[in-house]
Length: 335
Ligand code: NAD
Ligand code: TDX
Image (cartoon, rainbow, N blue to C red):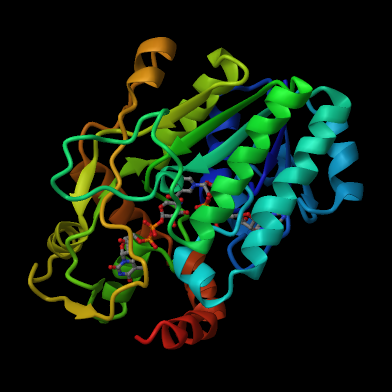
């Protein structure tokens, strides 16, 4: 099977490439990635010679069209993915997430190629801490940030291309991922690498916001399950019943790194900060037989802490290269 992976030099996409080559020896993988601040060829170390890598923009039809024409399936991960950045400057989110998806959909329609769209639970807005409901495939879209609104817009485009043009497409909306090769701007890698550098963790607001954590390998196994067994036109939510509030995540990271669990600070909250995400993944589990392999968040987090400890050569250059951008964003956001 010839697989075109967009965003394959980023966090989830690179883990998808590694996992694909480990579990499907006859897959032929092409990666299309613009290598923005968030993408790095070092994330493909170990598999680089087994992958065709194309540096290019998903919003550039001239690049996209021949690559899609040559694929059996497109798995679209490429995106601007960080909420804080979307508050400081929304414009790349509109181009990459909306125009980029449009460009891929047009190519997939022209060449009748199977398309899988990787999206987020954030399109459903947020839940109260005590809400008994969780998100399902029927939850209405109410995105809060420029990032989640751009992802919601891209999901709507996919649905329209299915209905209007009969595109063979599926969508997955996943909860918060953690694991190796996640950019240091994100919550968990930020705290781990800061602690290695002797900097105390920073919790936005009261720290009681809840995220529903899933290991990146479990997410990617679910994506493959949907590509292979999902019904075209359908949406599947992906989650592993991993609800934890941010304060408890920080306390666990501190404990796993041998520090005092109370050694953290509170900083200015994120504007429009979603309170809680929670996924009900019954459709994926029952219809397609997927189940997560990581039993506990604690075990997965311990392995992730270990990965960052052992792979400073991967994250240090990234942190050095993006620290000025990080500082500018934090300043704009009043921190
Ligand atoms: P990431 O920011 O780590 O990686 C994004 C990758 O896309 C990078 O390699 C970057 O270079 C590339 N890219 C950006 N703009 C591009 C463009 N215009 N053309 C080509 N490549 C471009 O993101 P991630 O966390 O790996 O997220 C991947 C996907 O999964 C996104 O669509 C995101 O919305 C979705 N998602 C992420 C999470 C999460 O917890 N991280 C959860 C659910 C869904
Ligand atoms: O330093 C921090 N301190 C802090 O308290 C950072 C970076 C974050 N936070 C909080 C904000 C969130 O409540 O931690 C939580 C997680 O933050 P992020 O890592 O920025 O993730 P989030 O905004 O939840 O979005 C993530 O999950 C859904 C991904 O970045 C998205 O791409 C995905 O769609």
